[in-house]
Image (cartoon, rainbow, N blue to C red; front, side, top):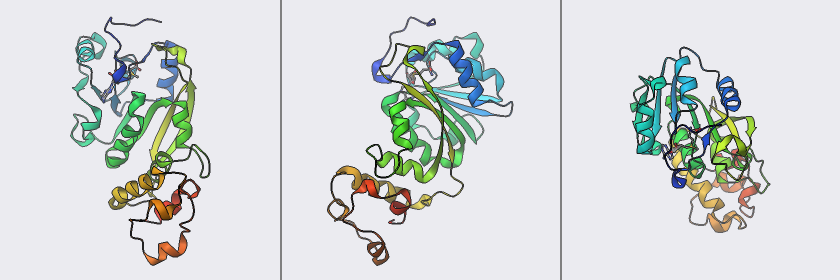
Length: 255
Ligand code: SAM
């Protein structure tokens, strides 16, 4: 394993670099890049995955927040012609990036912003096709949790209303430099053909679910007492229930 630059690891930007060629090859095989693909990479770091994917696709843009890494990426011979955007991914509109939409998204992302990145993807559903996102294994388990379990929460419900998830494989800590303390997983997201909640109700739905789970031990009639619901919702939903017992469809039927 080797690291290509001497730049310092920035913890606040969640920098754990992939440094195992076998694992990188496995990720590439899983993504299965095509000659016609437009790829958006979130957080390319030193470009370990970028340089394997870039030659295989039609076009690629990489968004990186760390200015030192931007310099490094620009200077790499193998990345000549790559569109590199310096900035915070969460502030970018996919539609305005210098690649044709729909993009395929890939990213070994900083784990501290996993849920904002997933919400960012949900808010821009019309501009991407699929997304391969690396995250803590425990977070991946939360995403696929079933109602009534401890792992089931806001993240599970909002994501599950819009996206399908495939658990690709687990990644052990020792393929990263520096090593994280936890196992990671790579998840493939695709969009539900018909989202359970229509786009125009996303904001209300997200707020409702966040409020309901803000105190997960409390009954809905307490956490949601400031909300107005139709008679039909009041008839269907028992407000003495706790949020973790409601299915994604039940939450969706409340907005
Ligand atoms: N993809 C590289 C790899 O696998 O070796 C680096 C992965 S590292 C876990 C996450 C990368 O995302 C870092 O390069 C970090 O600087 C970058 N990053 C962190 N926050 C970001 C943000 N808000 N927008 C774009 N890039 C970000």
